Length: 187
Image 1 (spheres, helix red, strand yellow):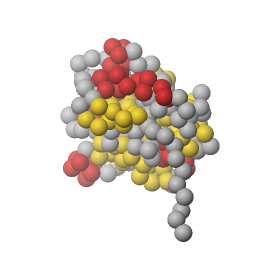
Image 2 (spheres, one colour):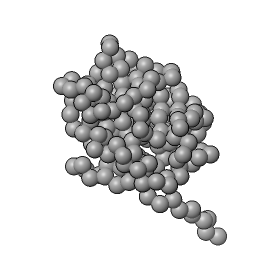
Image 3 (cartoon, helix red, strand yellow):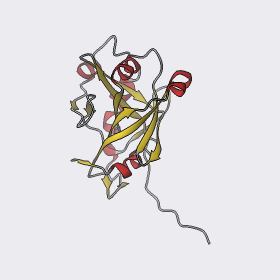
Image 4 (cartoon, one colour):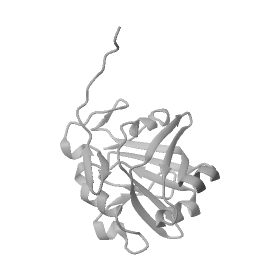
């Protein structure tokens, strides 16, 4: 079940480096794209960085709205995640064509992708230099959610394979999140 995550803990949703789905909405249009380059940036207020290439439909919608969502897809969504990263939303309604279900964001207009295990609602912060030079968006997390079966007391606990997040390598090859291990501090 999707439950709220304290904003001060929201960056933990990204600490393990998963591939993400970024959604954006503006002018009555909505799009989703896969993004491997999304990371936590700061704790208070929580901020993330995301690379969204110039010339993409998602970038156009983010530029117009100043907001987006980040959803963390699972192994169960692997094929859809790969596919939405390989085509343009200008050419196809990715949600309808690939059967992705959404639910409205609680704060931003972009939707959250169902079937994921974590969700961040984000507002873009004005950082024109990095956006123009590197396609890098800095955004404040304004709401966060997680599946309470796998995000327990602020930590990931992947107990079922289909709930593991995915990590893109290249050309459609992914890893899934692995075994949880606890390090110990050396004396």
